[in-house]
Length: 312
Image 1 (cartoon, one colour):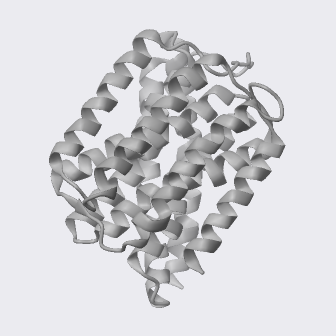
Image 2: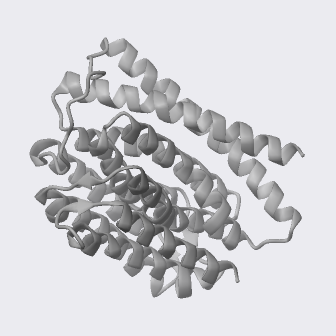
C-alpha cells in the first residue's frame, strides 16, 4: 500500500513541477531573446533529465549498474515512443530545417557514441565519460551561438515576461519538485517490482525509465496545451541527448558503469537506436516537415512492441 501511495504522490508532484518548469522556460526565452527550442533543449532538458541523473548515479554507486543503464536507455525509448507519441495525438508539430540538420543528427551521434563505447567491452569508463561530457558542452555552445528555431513558434497571449527572480524561482521549485517526485515514484515502483521478483534490468528499462520520463511528459503536455510546441519537441530531443552525454557521462566519471545483464546489449540498445532513427522518416512522411497524429500512433505502437518483446 505504501508503494502505491509513493507512486501516486510522485506523479502529482512531477506534473506540478513540469508546469513550474515550463513557466520559467518561457520567461527565460522571452527575457533573453533565445529561440524557445534552444531553451527547451537546454534549460528544460537539463531539469527534466535531473531525475535520470540522480537515479543513475545513485544506482551505479550503490552497485546496481543495470538499473543505471536501463534507466537511461529505457527513458530515451520512452521519451520518443511514449511521450512524443502521446504529444502528437494532442496536436501536430511543424518542423523546420534545422531540426534534421542539427538536432536529430546530434541525438543520433550521442546514441551511436554510447553504442560504440559500451557494446564491445560492456563497460562505460571515465575516459568515455569525459568524451561525452565535453561533447555535450561543445554542442551547447554551438546551440546558444548559432541555432535558429527548428519548430514554428506560435504567438501566445500568456507570453508575458516574468521578473528574473520569479523565473529563477519557478525554475528552482520546478526542478526540486521533479527531483522529489521522481524519488517517490522510483522508490514506490522499485519496491512494487521487487515484490514480484522482477530483474534489475527489467525494472530499469520499464518502470524506472517510464517514471523518470514523467517529467518530460508533464513538461511537454503542459507545453502543448499552452501552445509552446517548440519547447515540447526541443525538450524531448534535448533530454535524449542529455540522458546519454550528461547522465551517463557524469555517472561514468564518478564510477565505471558495467553491463551485468546482456539483454541490455542484445535487445534494449538496438531499440533505442531504432526509435531515434525512426523520428527522421516520420518528419518527412506522410506529410513533409510535420509530425501528426498518425506519427503518434506509429510511435506508440512501436513502444508497445518494445515493452512486449522486453518483458515476455
